[in-house]
Structures are given as structure tokens and as C-alpha cells.
Length: 306
Image (cartoon, rainbow, N blue to C red; front, side, top):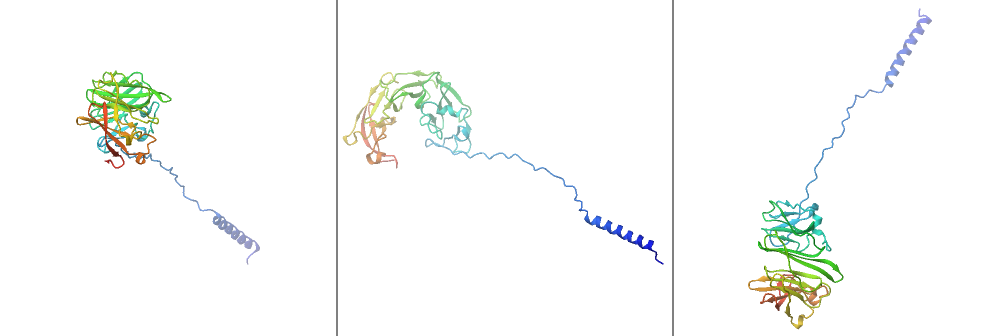
């Protein structure tokens, strides 16, 4: 006979069993321990920017100013050589250029010689004559005026020259010519024409004969001087200008040698409007630059003569 005590025991056992079942069903499943691995950061070197060569002439020698570094190539950009120079020193003075290209005439660039005129501790030139294997520096002048116009050229191993102007006041300025006959070891100064007008262009065609042209502000006639003794004496040139071109061709570029004659290209100046303002005049001299005759018109757009 089932007693009351037995029934109570059975009920207690059922209640305990049900409680155990409920307890384990409510337990959240234990997740395995996760290993947290920090993300790895590999340093990736930025790709070197491809340099775009700037060709100043028809040779395959070019330069680049990208990445605030002056570099030169002798093989159309296949390889580059850095020039050991502070790039800002190439643009010092009263005229700074656009700093995207070198200032016109402030450098020499041929397959045999590359040189740059700059101003740092004085007026200096850095150059190489062995395609960048080594660079040499020469001091042209310990003290020099802040440059507006500047030009450097090597006509031969025995005649290097630098022409600069600066210290401008209104339409007047100072100017200097320096030349060397021993590859830059020693530099000499010489006389200038008796005028303080602003230099438009200038240069030498050999180790004796040179020219300086003046008049950058509203010129109305050619104003150019010639020397045949490295600047000891200067004479104003005579230009036989056809009446058709009077006050048209007024701004000469530096003359150049063509066989036994000299030639020069003359621009119209900032206010020229003849044939759209871009037609130039070609002139020729047979007496070492003292007198000039008109030859023909030149269209620089097509590189053709009219």
C-alpha cells in the first residue's frame, strides 16, 4: 500500500529533476576563447613619380624640377642625375621666373657641357663636362647685384661669359659683364655701354664681339650697342630700317653667327600689332655688327620665312 510519505518523496524527486533540467536549458552555451590578432600594417613605399623631361633645345639633354630637385638626363629620361644645388638659389634676384622651368638663358645645356648660373654666396656657376659624373663649382663674383636679367654662355673652352642686370629703379638699372678665359678659374669685368636703360637681351658671338640691346618698356626703335674688343669700347649700331617697318620691329634678340655674317631676329615689342603682332624681322650684318640691313619677315608660328 502506497503511503502518503512515499508519494511526497516521489513528488520531491520529480521537482528536483525538473529544476535541474530547467537550469541546464537556461545556461548559455560557452563559446570557445577567441584569439584576437591585431591587424598588421606594412609600410608601403610610395611609387617614385615619373619625371617629365623639359627640353630647352634640340638635343636629347633635358632637365626636371619635379620634387623640388634639379635633375638632368642625357638619354631622353631613361636615367637621371641629381644636381647638388639648392633649387631656390636658381631663382633668386629681382626676377624669379615661374619656378616651373628654369629662367631663360640662366643655364647651358649641350651634350658636352651642362651648367647653371645661381646666386647664393655670391654669383656662382655649377657645371659638369662629363655627364654628371662629377660637378664643379666656380665663383664668378663674391658680391653681385640681385639679378633681373641674367645670361650665361660658354662659347669655347677659352671664353665663358655672364651678363646680368639688376637694382632697378623705375626704368633704370645697373648691369655687369663677367668673362673668363681659363674655364672659370679667374673672372674679369669689363665696360658697359653708357646707358642705364633696362637690358632686353645681349651676348657675345665670339671672344671679342658682343651686343647689348635695350628697351623693354614701350620701345619705338632698335637701341643696341656692339663691342669688338670684349667691352672695352661700345658703339651704337645703325639699322637700315625700311619705312614699312618703322616703329614695327623694335626689340632685337641677341645676334648670332651664320658663316661670315651676323644675323639677328627683331621682335615687335609688347605693343606690336603688325600682322597680329607676332611676325618678326630678320636682319643681317657684314661688318661685325655695326650696320644692319633688313632681309625678310619671319613667321615664328610656323618657323617659316615670308
